[in-house]
Each structure stands twice: as structure tokens, then as C-alpha cells.
Length: 373
Image (cartoon, rainbow, N blue to C red; front, side):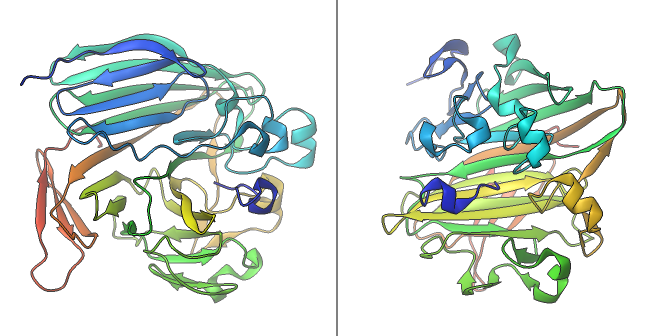
């Protein structure tokens, strides 16, 4: 994320049928397997639909209205579902904004070109697309692979610096869940630990640090696993040095469903949790993982040498260099009254989802797509 919350007005056999179809903003890539369906917009990069066919519950229903968009993004595709922040996470500097650089990067204002529409290849349904950021001089290509007979997909994205200069940049995923999957009963889990409140003084973040799920915020305590807090906030977390795999999940025990993301911490070392409540009900919850923990202009980060336990809030990309990152997203049904996810154990062909429970935790097996490494 990093929006200014105040400015957003606290904001039988199933047929396999991959295709390119019309959507609200033009075209959408549609992947339809025997167990799951996935839809990705070509305008603005957003994943707006992912569900199991047996229940059709879509976690990615959240969307801003056009007049809620940050000023530099007015008239462009709205932020919704799971979108990509490329080049930057949060606001550009004043000078960059005057030059036309939008909030969360130019990638979300543009149309993607489809190189390969969804097509069945072996055990997966595969599509490819790319987008050229003219102002930021970056090219992003993506390959999407949905299991033909499963309930997970692999996203592979490559950013290439087309400028004649080396530069700092950021590469952040912005998945945000909405109702009805997001409800008062939804719980958030992850294997990230140390963190801070985005509203804290960033010159002394380590002094106010806390460990997930204990959120010692600037305006009081919050249980970060719960989504029913009345306040709006963003907390930012890092992973233990020994954790090669990062994960974050949202569980709705009433719907008996878990949405989860799995990624390499060397590619995505930060996790940002954004909470927004509207009309006394949870309205949006971001599960954002990326290369940064502060949505500040780069000059601010560099001038102040901002780090958190040795982690910098940006990456470096050389001229002509390409950097590839991947993540897996999955949906899985869980038993009734499932208390949330305590651990994810990856295997050769799948994963075990272990309940967050000290006494006899239940285990759910999932056939997970491969290719993360």
C-alpha cells in the first residue's frame, strides 16, 4: 500500500476453458481449470478474481472508486484486487509527481500487451503478457501458470531497466482482500516477525519495534491477526534470517477457506499489513509483500539512511539488468472452525497447512504448483 488513508475518505467433469474476454476496463485474461478460476485485468495489472469452483468465493473484491484514487492517478484504472507496484511503493516525490510519475508506479496506469493468451500446456494453463513503463523506463513481463486440476497459481515477473543509468527501484505485490471473504471472523497469519507501525518516527524504528501478531501501535495495542480494529493502520515486518520461505495467509473460518501466498524471502524481504475499516465493518486488508518497508520517496530514504535491522527499503537495478521474482498463490478448503495457519510445510509436490493451535492442530494437504525456486 501506501495510500494516505485520510485522503481516501476512510477509503460431473468441468470443462477447461482458457480465454481472453471483455471486462470493465477492456480485456481480461481468464484461466478456467477444473477446480479453480483466475481472472487478471490487462488494464492496470490487477488480479480481480480467484475462486474455487465449488464455492465461487472471490477474496479479491476490494476496489477504490475513481474519485478515491490518489491525485496523480486520477483517470487511470482504479486500484483493486491484487495489483503490482513497480518502480515504487507509495508516493513519488513532489518533483516526480510534477513530471507525471503516479502513486505506486506507472505500471498501474497502463495496458498490458498479451503475448500468449491462456492455453493448456501439460498440467497448467499458461499465459504471458508485458508492459512498458515509458516514464519510468522499465519493462515488466509476466508469466502466469494456473494448475489445470489444482487450486494454486505461479506468477513469474521480470523487471528490466531500459534506462541508460543504474537506479534504485522497488518491486512490491499489493494483494488486498475484501468482503464477503473479508469479514469480522477473518484472521491473518504469517511467518514474519519484527515490525513497526508506518506512523512511527522512521528515524528510530527499532526502538518501537514489536513482533507479529503483537501490534504496539502509536495509538495503542492491536492484535494483528484480527481485522475488526476500528483504526486504520499499516504495519511492516521482516522475516527471520533463517527463513528462506515467506508466507502470509487470510483464513475465513465461517467459509472454511484459506487464501495464501508463498515466496522466497531473498526476493521479497518485507511484509506490509494494511487495515481499513468502513461503516464499522472490515473493508480492506492488504497482504503486501515486496522489496520495501517504507513508502517514502527515494531521496528521503537515502538522505536519512533508513534501515530496519539491516534491511534497506529499496533495491538497485543496473542499466539493462533484468530481475525476476516469483510467488505462489493458493486457495484451500479447511475444516470447520479452523483457527488459522500456524505453519506451512512445503513438500516435493505439495504443502501441508498446519492449524494455529497448540493442542492437536489439524493438517490440510494441498497439491501445490511447483517452480518457486
